[in-house]
Amino acid sequence: VTFRVEAEGIVPKASLPRYSGAGAVAEPFTTREIWSGGGFVPAPVYDRASLGAEAVIAGPAIVEQMDSTTIIPAGMAARTDPWLNLILEAA
Image (spheres, rainbow, N blue to C red):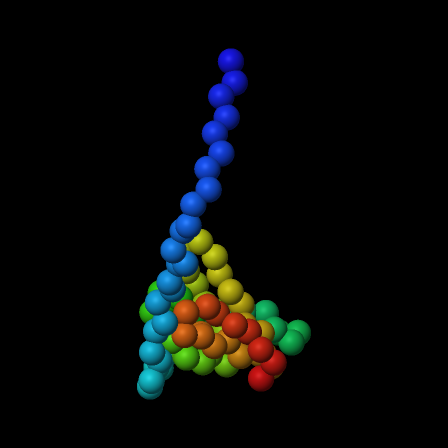
């Protein structure tokens, strides 16, 4: 027995909250040694959940969250946008 249903309707557009980052400062919670440029260098470690909008982190650095770790290499910088996305760019 097969039963199929098809429906159409109007769904309201999702609204994503924008966060204000005026004066946002990223503070590391510890430092670790990472391999970069042919040797070990100290890198600050940031908690992803504590980063506010428009926070900027210069590499080398580490951003940790529950399900992933982001390495920011030397010469790169990470910033958070108003929706808290982490964006890496050449410094």
